[in-house]
View 1 (cartoon, rainbow, N blue to C red):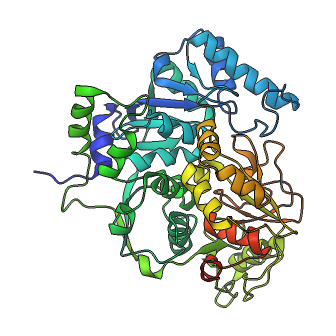
View 2 (cartoon, rainbow, N blue to C red):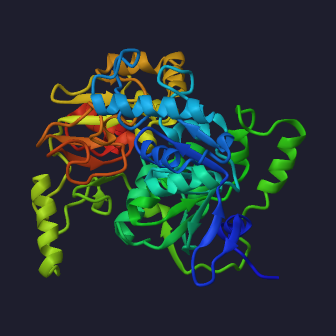
Length: 468
């Protein structure tokens, strides 16, 4: 009997038709949409006189360019307002479930899907957003698509896709104090580069991965795209089932038992082969931070920026250009560098577990005077929990500004921008030039490292703050 991977099992069961020497016609179980990539797709459907094939398989929420203050007021930015209004119109017209601003389950699309139990093992999930890979944490094949593909899924519930190659990344052993899932993924990307998984779908495995919570697993899968992968996934287990049980869209009663029985089959067979494998030791991972302008330019917080030794030609020129943008020099330490902003939020680290970690860390402390500290819950549900658990009070006493749910300062599509030339240590997923605002300098790190930076006003090893 052929040994197959988890990825193969899900992919092969969703192929409607294979095109000889071409892509597969691939069925999509769940389609998430937001206000940015859907308006043109709906417009094209209307122009062609085509409806939405299965409205119940699509779920919508505005998130990218919504304001994170005064969400009960009219959106001031004209383009943002038009996009949100168009999303409302289209959802009403085609009978699509919408979690709008101000409703109980509004939030970032990749936060509310798991929260509601919409995201489940064995599914195929797409969204016009690259960080759809987040949902792979549940043992699902989830990936981002473009606007024309959004249109294709709305019209047919299928997509044309060539099957990617398979990679397995195993992390074994115990994580050290102050080391989080964000550090794991930043470490992996720093080792294999921001293009190291291009053309692959990644399965994460090993004891260090298995010991993570669901929220931590989502952080890992979220950033798969940052090493060029089509997506990432983790085999479902008891942690997955416990997280999903009782959620609004999770199966109930006998259906739950049937679902779990199936979900338990979703694992890679012993002896199944991958096109590429990497193995890492959890003991080697320390709190990480980026210093450049792609997520692969990461080092340990206690490390030095790599020198140019051995670099030649365009590689060296590109490297120095990146450091120049960031205001850094080859060989210098990042630790001790003064920072202007910290941001906790995004589909990478805007979940309740992240906010709990920051609140626990800063409790009884005040942020440094030079720091502007924003904390943005990934959903209304996260915001509600943060209030109920007393986290908001702790954070506000520490000087953090709690905003309303949305993508916020992850990207410069809304009002939450980092000013030009200022340094921001961020829990988000990208540090490209201008990602958080024109001229903004972004350093990616874990919520714990961000909390340590907030309290000290400079790049700090969170383990040192723990000790003090």
